[in-house]
Image (cartoon, rainbow, N blue to C red; front, side, top):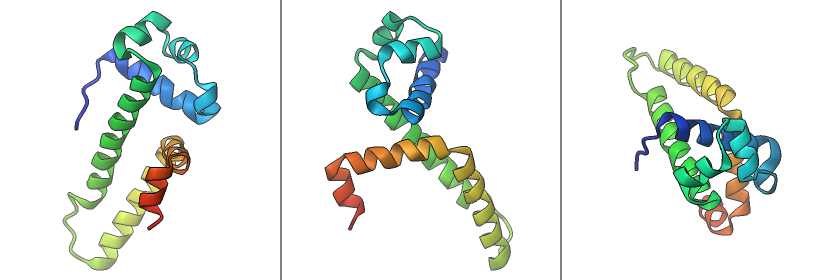
Length: 123
C-alpha cells in the first residue's frame, strides 16, 4: 500500500518520526509534532484526524520507504562476480542502516512493545 503525501503531510510525518526517536511514544504529542513541522495543531488533525491515525500513516509510509530502499540494494547490480556482489550489498546495507538509524530504532521499539508483532518475529 503506497501512500502519497503532500508537502504539509510530509513535514508532519517527518516531524513525527523525529520526535518519536527523540522523545518516545509518550513524549510525542500532537502539539510538539505541529511545532516541529511548523504547522498548527489544527492542521495536524485536519490532515490526519487523530494521533493514532498519524502514527499508522507514518508506519505505512516508512514501511514502503524501507521496502523500496532494501529492494534498491539488491536490484540494478550488473556485475555477476559473487565477491563484487557481496561487497556491493554489504556497502549498501551499511549505508542504509547508517542513514536510517532513527527510523530503525523506532521500528524496533514498536516491535518490542507490540506483543503480537514480537511473537511473529521471535519465531
